[in-house]
Length: 330
Image (cartoon, rainbow, N blue to C red; front, side):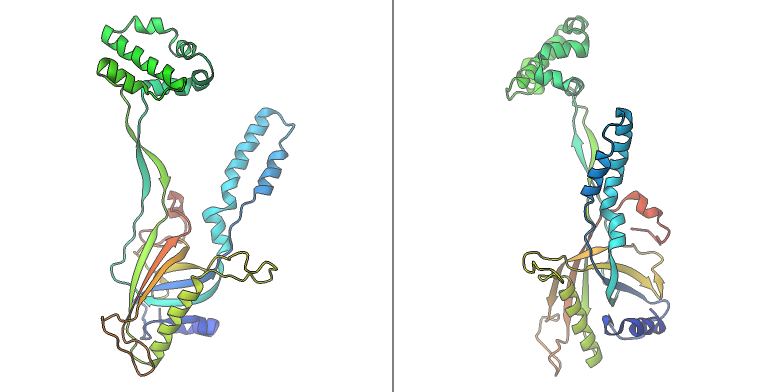
């Protein structure tokens, strides 16, 4: 951040802009920019979606299915990443800090082991028959007839398969027995479970930052105090809603934060980017050198501030296609 860039922000936003340290930052200086923004909940357009579905009544079933699929596709657009981008605006504060030590990013998704044996497949194919009707009739539908299948098997395979089917039939009647347990007891075998690792979810990223504040003069002391105050105040929920007659009944969400690694006036050409985030934890050690020591005005000579941010939305592959993505992306 060059001095001219910083001065233009000061001119526009006044005391809502602060930075530490107050030394000159040149075009090749790296730093972390934090924007504090108003947050508006994206909402759920349930009334609108319900109205769209009601409008399909009376139409041919094929048309209703086609329009229903489109309604389902549109429903995520009423919340989530794209909605949050348009709702998060009105910058309240600008905070400029040095690049913290030990910066890192971590992307992760959830995968888990899953199994599916032949009896499970048959159950899926004719699930309602297994549950509501005669299990033997369902097996006959799945395999033609049990007899035709068994004729092609060795005696050992026949006993194992019959044991598995018996366990399935007993289980459908309320017994707490699985096909595999019965098969193992009867023949010493189990069905091939076809174990596979399957994708089963996404996760929100969390970032932790640690900053050392050691003010060198009265001006830096005031900046540090202001930065800490802004972060504490904006991460706190609002107990009184402006213009509401129900003050005290609800809590309004705190502010949210846009973080960017910067070089000069531009985004950093290599380091990762962030989605809008919430400040979920803030801790301050006013005796950073393990000794209580202050200047004449009471400002501690060394403070350590730890911040934990969590992104409001997970990362999707399509996010890397955005035009303003720099460096390694998210």
